Image (cartoon, rainbow, N blue to C red; front, side, top):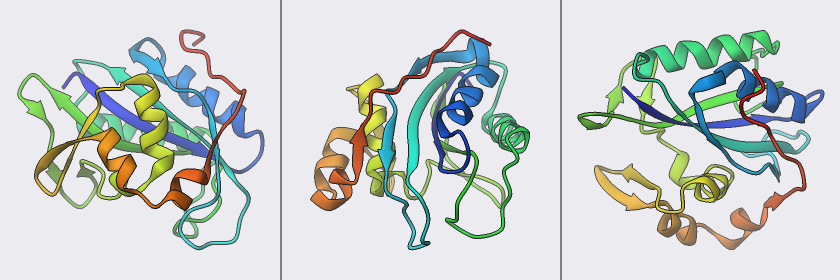
Length: 174
């Protein structure tokens, strides 16, 4: 595989430092990092707002499951605890989609679902993704769709809940 889109988020502790630690841990594979957004918590659990961003990375030697293992290791390094679905987290790294020489990766196993089954419903994924890849496309229900179109289809309140910040992440530090 060669390319992966990762959504990163944090709402516990030093949120920006947690996001930066993910960028640093991915290291030389990082090709683009979006601006940072602040987002109201999603999923109905009462908690503080998240900082969110998107990373595009490329590593020909890493397949989708290797990316998942790497993402989970980075979460663990940041004291991620999985106690409550959609609950607060020090760091959350989701694989949004992946592609390689044969095209988009489709995976539906016990550990990994690609493309991410909810990415098209989450403005906090789509907005930063468009910042780093304005021509981005995502497969939804077996059809490749422009991410801009998917974002436009979301409820205005969902889009308005994702607010730009002046915060930035720096690639190439790690």
